Image (cartoon, rainbow, N blue to C red; front, side):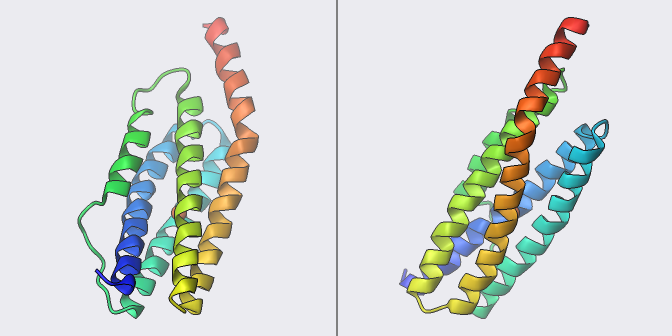
Length: 162
Ligand SMILES: [Fe+2]
């Protein structure tokens, strides 16, 4: 594999990651129906995530590559993060927030690496598109970070009320 093929392959990992996150966020939006602010923010990020997948696909194609439909090891790893939050319980919102917070940070790490790789290969336009995605992931991570303590407090208070 040459360096360009590596970049295409890493972009494909990011594509799988976005596709798999879209499904997780849809489940988490449903879980957050009782929390309008959280529900709205997740719904917004689902739209962003769909657009991100399209942007990444465009980057892959502009490099002469093809989107791979095979789920990558990265997507598999994201799957195990999602797997934590499947059973509905009083702490579902905490588990979902943890899973989403981790996922956003995994995405931040991935896009930072991809931006670096694109710049190294002189693909400045791709680096700029990925930077716009990175900003969206950072915004979502910040939102989740702010909401996590409240979700923890609420779950604990509600646990003693039942
Ligand atoms: Fe994303």
